[in-house]
Length: 366
Length: 46
Image 1 (tube, rainbow over the protein chains, first blue to last red):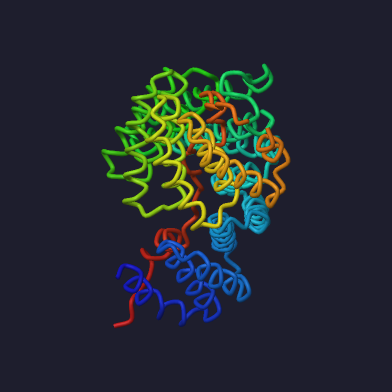
Image 2 (cartoon, each protein chain N blue to C red; image 1 turned 120 degrees about the vertical axis):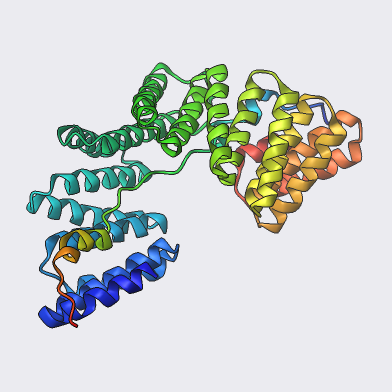
C-alpha cells in the first residue's frame, strides 16, 4: 500500500518533468518491492531493465547496482554479485559518496568471502570499517566488525584442511586466524550491546560460539550459544533457535555430556520438522544416531540412523546415504547382528564406489 | 570378520557441521533515497 501511494504521488511529477527518469525509477521501485517480498529473481529483471533505461542520477544508479548485487548474492550467483558491487563501489567513489563507498565495500567483502578470496575480502571489510569510523557511523562500524569476524572465521575454516582435524586441534596458523575472528565478534558485541540491538547481538553470539567451538573452547561456546538461543526465542526466530540447539548439541558432545547433547539434538529435530527442512532433519537424525552410539544405546542409534537413511534416499543424497549405511553397519555389529551389519557394510561399499569416495571405499573394505 | 567400530566422538563431528549465522548485506534503498530527496518539494497537481 505504501509503495502504491508513493508511486501515485511521484508519477505526475516525474512524467511532467522527465519521462525517461520516471520509467527507470518505476522499474527500480518494482524491483525493490519484488526483492523485499523475497522474489529476487523477478526483482533482478526489473533492476536490469532499469539499468537499460538508464538514469542521470548517479545516486539512484548506485542504489540499483547495490540491490542487483544483493539480489544475485541471495540467489547464490556470486560472480554476478561481485560484478554489480564493483560497479557500485566505482560509482560511489566517483560521486564522492563516502557512506555509499563504505556500504559497497562491505557488500563486496561479503561476496569475496563467499568466493574464498579472503585477503581481498579483508581489505574491503577494513575499508568499510575505516570509513564508518571516519563518519562516526556506529551501525556501520558494528556491521563491518561482524563481517570481518565472518571473513576470518571462513578463512580459518578454509585453511584448516577442510575439516580433517578436530575442533581445538588445528595448527597454530589456523588458531591465530580464528582468534582474530573471535576478537572481531567481541568488538562487535561491545557496540551492539551498547546500542541495545538484540538482533545483531544474536548473530554475533551465534558466530562467536562457533569460533570458540573451532578453537576447542567448548564451555565458552556453550555460553555464547545459550545467549543466541535466548535472543532467538525473544524474536520467535525458529530458524535461529534450531541453529542454536544444533550448535549446542555439537559443543556438548565435545564436553562429553552426551545425554545433554541428545536433548539439544532432539530440539533441533523437532524444529527442523516444524520448519519442514528435510535436509536439516536428516542431519539431526544422523547426530542423534551418533550420540546414542556414544551412549552405547544401539537400538536407539539404529532407529535414528534408519530415519537418516530414509531422508537421504528421498533427497538423493548419496554421501548421506553412505554415512547412514556405515553407521548402521557399526551399530548392528555392536549388537552382534552380523547379517544386518554385513548388509549395510556392503551397501556402504557400493555407494562409496558410486560416488567415487576412495577413503569411504577403503573403510568399507576393512 | 567385522569388528566393532563404535565411532569415537572426535570423528563424528567436524567443522562442516556447525551452523553459521547469516551475512548482513548493506542496503541502498531507491525508495528511501527518493523519499528524502523529493517528497518534501513535490507540488501535487490539484
